Amino acid sequence: GSYSGNQVYKDASGNGYFFADRETNESKTNVYINASEQFTSYKDGADIYEYDYQQFGLGADYAKKLTTHMALGGDIDFNNSIFSNLKAQFSLGPRIEYSIFPYKEFNTKRWVFQYGIEGRRNVYYDTTIYLKTQETFMAQSLSSIVSFTQKWGSINLGIFWRNLLHDWSKNNLSFNGALSFRLFKGFNMAIWGNYNFVRNQINIR
Image (cartoon, rainbow, N blue to C red; front, side, top):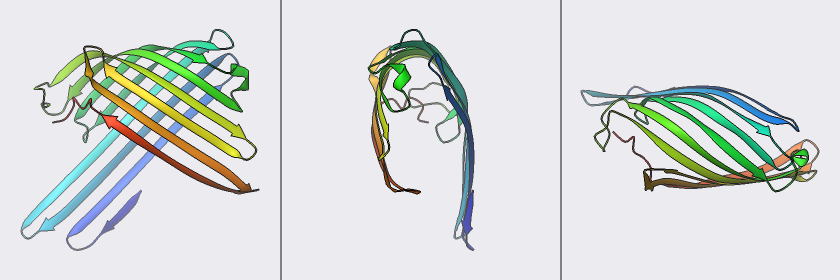
């Protein structure tokens, strides 16, 4: 958490998360919980402006490895966010995965393609720009994730696509990557970044 302020300005924030991942030659399991809040207040003459941003999320996903290259599973998620105008967001759906490399090599190299379909229920704090206070819809996602872990460091790259099934113009395309170099024992250097094309903000107030 953090806090800063003076006579006319105050800013306080806090966040926390818990996650657990487990992968074997037979299955993959992931669970997470995260929460954050930021409060900002400042004075402008006789006026006082206050902003409060809250976010909470939890979820889990599981995949059963059917062969050395293919897995089938699903995920379930819940999100709440004042900033994103989401009083409650529920997501549930199946996912299929294909691995270029055999799963037994997941500790050193991985290249997987994932496709999923999910049902999503959104309940909003305020009416959206599409005049919705709540809605239910289907979405699909396609992603490719590459990672290599060696003695010198690691490489991680990902491409993620998501769109609403009833309106493909509402979509999101994301790229992210990270490089970690082991310069010498006990000393690593890492760089990372991401770039997003966001066209699916149906939740805007």
